[in-house]
Structures are given as structure tokens and as C-alpha cells.
Image (cartoon, rainbow, N blue to C red):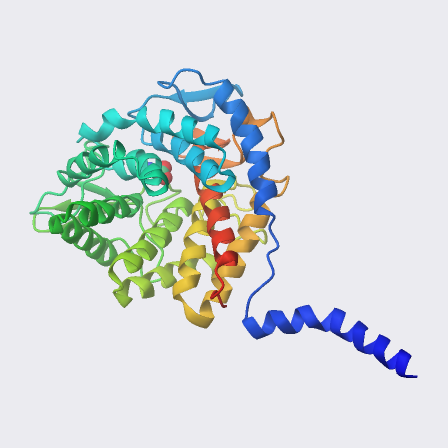
Length: 403
Ligand code: GLY
């Protein structure tokens, strides 16, 4: 009898123990095998490196004929490959990735003097910022600081926002929601150099964006055009389905960007805004069950429209930070991010070794209205996917992490 009781007790402990432990600490068990996903990424990007001996040819995407599409250092995406190589180094600790990441990061260094683009955060901070964070290599620091000052020249005080494009369809002083992503770079430079002007510039840009880029349902316009004095002249889209539509990657850029604003300022208005964007995104009736959006939430042919894995990867990464600031409600953000990462890691989106021109993810959309980069791999989808995996892993390693 005693033997039977002990056996039942043991059985109960075996079954209920892990569940009880989990609920006591409020900590979900990891369901994504980050080491396995990185091992596959390492094999795939090893091939990418071997097919890219020339650091003037940055992997970008696939062409309509299926061949690789490379771009030069001045293209807005030139920093993502180096950034992904740093993430591979961060996870694997294999010095071969550090060597490759350094080479591809330094390949964009010349862009530090480029004052013709607002994308210097993507171009410089993703590669060299990650490199500096991981290695403290002092070569990277002055390049980053010069780049931040170049970016700062794009904020004209009479407008109070950082200008995005120099010229597009005759738009006056256009600002795109994507530009929120470059503020993290300026925050870093403000801290590294003590230049308070860079910090104030982030606040000015984010406050104007918060005021002018969003609709009452908390979705955002893609492009807002300004006149001096900061008054809005017009609202448009360039990459979305319509001026009034919710272009999926734009929503993800906003979610991520306002989460960074909260991280850097601790001003609750940015947190509230990031959460409003997240709620719009996650509760949208057109968000598919696998949580990878169509390229635009209002694309006219849904459900027969392309998905955008890049938006899914950016949103997953943003949500994995946002959940840490959101108390009990962070659970829903965490769970949504895990669902996104699970989908992206499945054969539906994850390329097999040797396929997909050696990119990691399939099925992204760059610019559907221009019929450019539709249903293809994109280098930045890979970057934010790896970043999200690392964030996921970091959350699970923190002893104090609760949901
Ligand atoms: N401008 C960056 C993007 O296509 O999202």
C-alpha cells in the first residue's frame, strides 16, 4: 500500500512539478530552439559569405529571375548583412563570425559622411553599433559618431523632424514612419559623445511623428509631408496599398521605434503609444492565424496577397522588448512574438540549406506598388529574425524574468 502511495506521489510530482514550478515563477518554458535555429543560420550564411567575396556587393534579395540581387554600400540596407554576422558571433562565439562581421561592417564605414539619407541608423548602427557593443573595438566609435552628426544635419530646426527622402514625387519635406528606427542610433551617439542636441532631436522627431503620423485607430500613415513651422501639408503612402491603408512594415517600424523611445527616455507616453500600435497590429482582423501579416493590412486582394516576413520579424523583435515594459499585459505581447518566431522558423518561411540565395527567410515584400521585391527574401528580414531569436533567448536566461 505504502509502495503504491509512494509511486502515485512520485507520478504526481513528475507530472505536476514542472507545471507548478512554471506558474510559481510565472515563466513560460522555451518552445523555440534558438541554438538549432542559429546553427542552421550559420550554415546558410557561411554559404552566403563564400558566394560574396567582394565587399562592394552587399546581399539584398532575389531578382524576379531567381538570381541574387546585390546592392552597393549607399543602399539603405547595406548595414544589415554585417549586423546579422555580429548576431551570429554573439550567439555562437565563433571568432570566424567576428572576422566576417568586422569586414562587412567596415565596408559601410564610408557612409558616415553621407548626408543624403535618413537611413544611417540602419546602415551604420546595425553593423558598427552591434560591433562596438560586442567588442568595444575603438575603430568603430568615431565612425558611428561622425555618422550620427551626418544624420542630425537632416533635421532642419524650422521643421523639427528629420527629413527622410530628398526627392520623391515632388513631396515637400517628406518624413516616413520608418525613420523612427534611426533614433536608436542618435540616442547611442548622444550618450557616447555627451551631445544633448542629439537626444533632443530624437524627442522632437518622435513627438511630431506621434502627433502627425497616426490615425484614430492607431495605425500610421507611411509618409507625412511638412511645411516650415512643422505644419502638415499632406499624408501619403509610397509602399502601402493606399494613402489611408496600414502598410504592414510601417506598423512594425512604429511599434519598434516607440518601444525604443520608451527604453531611452522612460516617458510613459511613448510606452502607451507603442502599446496602442501593438494592439492595433495584433487585434487586426486581417492578421493571419500564423501572425505573419499580409504586406498591407488593407491590401485589396486579401487573402490572396503576399505575406511580409520582414514585417513579422521586426514586429516579433519589437514585441519581445515591449513585453518587458508592459507588466501583466506583456504576456500577450510575448505570446504573439513567440507565435511569429515559431511561424518564421517553420518551413513555411524558413529556407532550407542551400536554397533562397542563402538568405534565411522567404516571403517578404519590399515595395509592392513599385512591383519591386515582391515575395522574396530580404536581408533585413533575416537581421530582425536573428535579433528576435537573441532577444527571446535573453529573456529566458534572465533569472528575474516574469510574465
Ligand atoms: N524604407 C524602408 C522599408 O522599406 O521598410
